[in-house]
Length: 393
Image (spheres, rainbow, N blue to C red):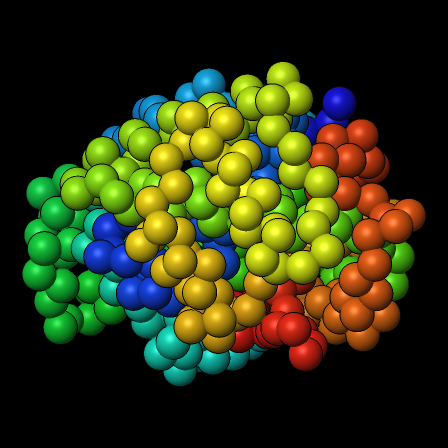
């Protein structure tokens, strides 16, 4: 069974969602990532957390709470083969060096995104920076200093001095608690984002070299390997989606973030146990009302509390946030990916235009079958009842 890799940025969004008062207080990136991860963790036994180019120490804070709660379900992948790691780092460096202007444009476009990016970076600075710096050794990857410096129009020495600052937990904590309006902070913030983009391409390269599957955070969509036209669809049954929403909703009944995360981890394990013991029946329903009833009944059989107030809010969150519902995952085989490009969006358009409308369950593959599928990039598709919803991506 080949691995399905989840990036930590997507997992972090699960933790972030639980810091809000209710599901509809989140934003498209956060909610869609939380739903995608939840569906994946329930159905995919072969999931692992992506490894970075410089390794990592133990997770702390809110992310540590989440990884601890999910320890029996998903764990960090084993250390990377030295040759594969080196080749992937070199590939990213070459691409970044040849695409300095493109990276600048991608970053500038992100800064204009008030709906997703600005909320993501504001939350990350406040809640993720101290943990990130401790776990990964600074706020951006030293492996990519020359490429980052070129994008930021700094010298390597100047950027290295800023990187050294982020090794100091007191400095990082001060940044998190009270972000200053000064050049050093702004350059570190920019380097943090661009480094996250390059790690996404690194994860893609590693997954391809190992023949694995990988699911990315939407932040990274414009720096990934270019997808070709060969994709296979794995349908998410309506009952699966509602069941995942019940699991997320159940955790909102807890008052503290720590309790919500602990509840989520326990419920993911209960759901997997019940599913694999065939205690629950999640066959697709012919209409939404039946799908909701089936999901709630399955939750009860799995000993997962379905609180009506939170369940309703979770069901409505996708539409309230403008992302619609998650309908399927596409697996774009690595053989059809061109290493020189960046067209993640193109593959989404292909998926939407040719297959999403074909929402007939007969003869289609389902999400759990990804475990025995080939390698490639996993691309979620969200849609409204009348067409594709692209707001989250």
